[in-house]
Length: 346
Image (tube, helix red, strand yellow):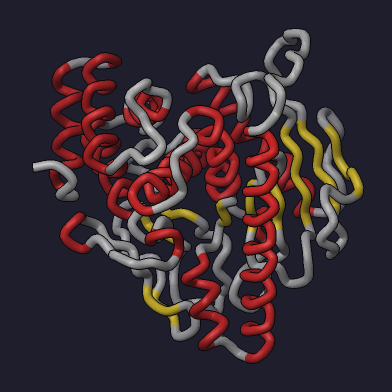
């Protein structure tokens, strides 16, 4: 299970925050750890199943959204408060979740020809107001879950469209490549979610690669935090520098790769390297990033050469090959140069 706020930030808050902030951060870490254990158990049960689930009759592609209110509890999904086709309600978190699910579905359907998370019309379910001062959002394999934040360091997590796109993309990756969530393959998993989370927002705003800010989670940091977002794809390592959250640890090149045993080998940290490679490629390709760079990365995620433990170098080679197959030799050169600049290839 992947969460929007990485554990190294929550661990830092648990050491340096105020007493309430430490309590909320520790509670969030404990909940996240528990969800990961449950997710691993459920994945094992599915792997030991007796075959594929029955296939539902084909329908015209369309989103099927349901938003529930967990009312501060940790029982999912909660009480349904808005369903597909229903109008807005008074709760802004419900409406933000509903619109975020729709924007992500629309991006994948319109730009990439994908019918929902599983490419088979999967219903999109979200629960808001999860837990007490829960400082995170996550995709659990079946639905999106949003906390309200603590109000001091983090705002409510439905505010960030790119975070919604990021978390739902974990579901796409799970269905396409099942990248091992550890070390370089785990960092690629996180980076791919950042890539398409950013593209969901850029597509919604009709921004070119040049116009986009390439920030992830910009709306989540409270006004008291010294920072601009959770991550910067354009300039990894510059998103925040705060007395409580600490300094952004993301590297921008392989010579600064962080070797660590925490965070599954630094999956949220070292994702800065492929993030910057995508940014550089998108900028050099020009126009809208979803027109060339996005399809290249999407085709690479679905390529037959992708293995669970894929390295940065292998993924770079796959993106270069897909660039040429989709667009031509010049696009291959541009993509290769982006990976070269972050020192993944020579």
